Image (tube, rainbow, N blue to C red):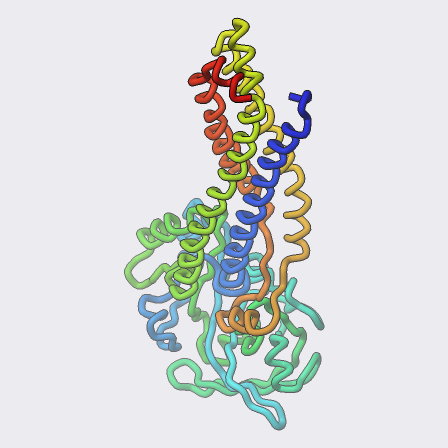
Amino acid sequence: MWRNHYRTAITMSAVFFAVLLAVLTSSLQVGVFDNLIKNVVSFYNGYVQVHKNGYWEEQILDNVFDDKTLLQDKILSVENIGSITPRFESFVLVATDSITKGCLIVGIVPSKEDVITQLKSKIIDGDYLGDYDTDILMSKGLAERLRVGLNDTIILLGQGYHGALASGKFRIKGVLEFGSPELNKQTLYLNLPVTQEMFGAPNKLTSYVIHLKDTRAMNATALSLAHLLDANYEVMTWEEMMPEVSQHIKTDKGSMYIIFMLLYILVCFGIFGTLLMMMVERKYEFGMLVAIGMKKIKLIYLLILESSFTVITGCLLGIGISVPIVWYLKVHPIRFTGEFAKTYQEFGFEPIFPTSTDSSVFIEQGLIVLTLGLILSLYPIIKVIRLRPVESMKKM
């Protein structure tokens, strides 16, 4: 193989760049879709929610339900459910001395909410809520719109449970920044008991947000939970709550399959081109070996060893070099600006394209290129089987 090391290096390079390109493309695809789902799930919605039946179609305070320890225990009895957090959500007017704006207010149990949505990590100014605080957390965009900041006081006005007046005056304890522009523009967080008291709905909830141990079993878990609970409750996955986002991801995945097919075709042409060059260069050599008595089966065995070595080595080098590149692009993702960024923000997504460092990306793409390389390596074997020594040497 090293008698003509340039030829061997070119063959390995073809496989190496094929693996590198396939891994980068695949990790970018997985990373982008994971980031889209993270925008939907970890920022706010969670993977699964439980509401009173009919709440999602008509999100009014008449469709709340009682917070029961027995109900929570029943939900947690499902094997794949790791934790739950209760919420009380509604819409209010938030006012300062000169500005008023409508916004979403969310009553939470701070310690439980942080487990599911990592809300505490989104604090950019001030402090996170304690479980007995009566202060409020405000999103960055809303604070800028109202021209308020840390320790300022705001007034909330809304309609409470059964038509009662909901109002209150609260100090801003912390400012949050979300990756989702939509949440950044309109979100307030209060302690759950304070929210329930303001709306005149003691011990009432609008939803349970559920954290899963294995997110791949989301649909099966939701189905099991729906069978466990009675007809008074509805169990919904994030895909059901946000079908437009789910459809957007499925459409993008479909287009990516076409891109991958084109990529693999290019990979095949690249590898096949080097094998074709190798056969043209070695035709005289193979013809001479067969002419002096070497059996074709031994020559075939030799070609299999050479092809396997070059393809496997190229794959390992490609995976090895791609790891630091993928890691760097995960830590420093591609960030878009301009009109493209605005389009993403309109859907509520961060305009960034991170990569995924999931080991399955490297293994899967490495195996695909390895398989393609080994299949294409059958070409030299077929040419040796059909080889006629005299004609091979004459043509040279």
